[in-house]
Length: 268
Length: 299
Image (cartoon, rainbow over all chains, first blue to last red; front, side, top):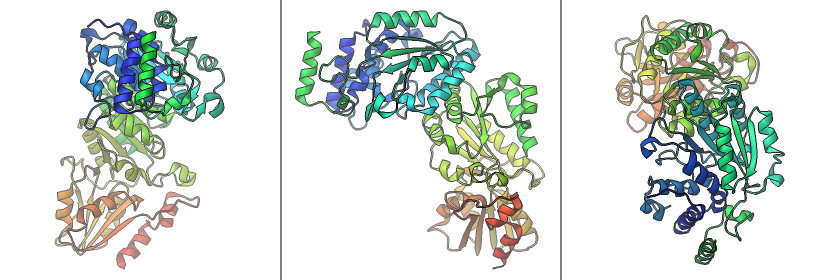
């Protein structure tokens, strides 16, 4: 099967999972669709196309609640079956509502926020010590960077000159209980990462061309600096009634909203 | 015991280039030999313990064998969730060293004391817990932890109380080690860590008390403990740890419903150290000094 990682189809897979499993976190998955699509299509290297390749690039979804977006990509990779997708959240199945490293292709168990970045930093540090050319990509949420451990990891990455590390901040402007501005002001995220010693780029997190160019540019720079992409995104991107509407952090699809969301995607 | 620890670290690192020693900016003089002998395998992660454990998990995924060192008040207490999720849930092999366990840092107060680490860790799967009593048990438990396929926590308590063994034990991983054994002693003391030395001192003055050391708290040798306990009149457990969730709790889980006897858990009785003072002062404050234990045994 050709792997195109078409954003519209990935969103459809997410909707199918969310509807059949009656699950939440739809908006959280939709804000990272294009980021994951570009990474899986153009950058992540899996020799022999297996998730167990010891020389693979690492992709760590530190904001583990966006995992349906990654499941959609893993389905297209062929590492998750259509049965896995169809049976999401059914008793006795493997796919949980938060990222879990027992799933092929999921590197880190990251439902608890502020963990995945450190583990990804450790993997990048291991690759650096072994002098492999593996890259490590970590996706964190903007709400997630409330966690102090994120900034501990940022210090470590900078001190140990991990230029094989690219952290992507999904800046959708919302966290569980409200906007990031209302809950705990983050200020200028890019300036913070620059202050922590990262080479940083801010871009439109739904513009695949911009994402692709930024990753190409950053990963080619072996300058002793870790890299950060601050991706301005829209929570719930792709469905008009979900966009920037934080209830889609928690809301489950009804038959009506599922049909309406699918119809919107079909029209695009 | 600290010299034995330093030696064990150097030996482990020289034997395996994948061994990395991670510290949260602790262990100043302790790591002199390691830094001299294996400088490339020494990683000071800064005062950032949460990240240190996450990094250790990432390194383990990348094929390294991290040994994470900290004061027990911080490793494991500050990083309990990272140990649970980043390391144990994924069945990674990382070895944690918690130094200064118990009330060793007596003058510094409760922030640097740790009497709850065993209780906190016992409920986490995929993690062994070791509590050596002297330098020989330290070498033995380090060797066991390195050879094991699972993660381990090594609890280092008061380290200068002298030896309770003459050589390194060569028993299997779950051994309960004899320290002082008499014929038909009616009283049994099962002790761990620094309290083995206290138990030995007490029992040396009596003829009717056996003392065994329990250097491996989890997995614990259930059958062996049952056999040692089943025909006793009195059983006591000694630990420089809370009476809740430590060695005493392990033993009570084994004998409850199976053996009728007098059993008392001797440990820190659910209170913080209120006052400043030296180690012996605080042990007395917590009713664990030789005099207090002697009085208890006489009753």
